[in-house]
Length: 312
Image (tube, rainbow, N blue to C red; front, side):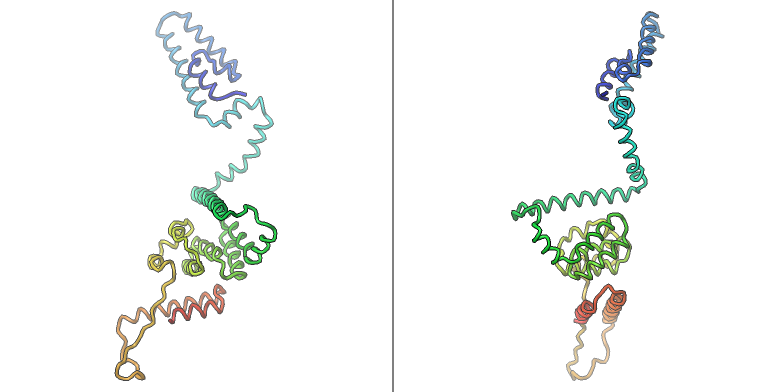
């Protein structure tokens, strides 16, 4: 088994006579270098001799640098293939398809996948610390697992949506998260995940709504909202600063009170000019709620609750 470090050392100190070539099994090239070295010495001290020896030294240094900078797998395939042809060639053929798939991915997808992997590792580390903090067992008991499944009926659909999301299949992910919310409308994770999917699909209204629902149901990791890659489209919207200042909740216009000290049964003759935008904003939000209900994104109970909250 040839080692690239040993080959580099032999090339650096003995490259003038081709020691690295004998070590790597290239006896023909090694004999040629020894022949030219002996020929240069037999010619006596002359500029030609100095030139040949200098070239041999330079080529040895170049070989040493190339060996040290060469990938270990490439070195093994080039110089150790004769010792282990089955394993080297088999691994090469077996890994060819994943490398081609990786080369076909864009830089943005590779960076996104790497961030997803790092985020998953951080989640696992956080869960491990939580288990150590509360002295929980790392493996759930069967009865406890069944109880948690009954308490979370949309878990399988949510996991399916996460799997589609990681494969960049956003439409399938949205459909899976919607099924999870139909089974469990108070699922914080499904609301947050579907908000991310809608943001990637550049549907800001739906993303804002589900993010509002997630925060209303207890989601409080606001730093994640400010830094999550999938919510980048949402953060460039004009409504996002007000949304963030309102603790990541959709703003509710205050009810307009009309003061009439003369007769409470008589309406005020004319509203101030600055009340127009408030009524326009309220009407726009009511129309948006009606559209969400027609598309099936809001149940009748949620529509009534949001409408009552808007109307004060």
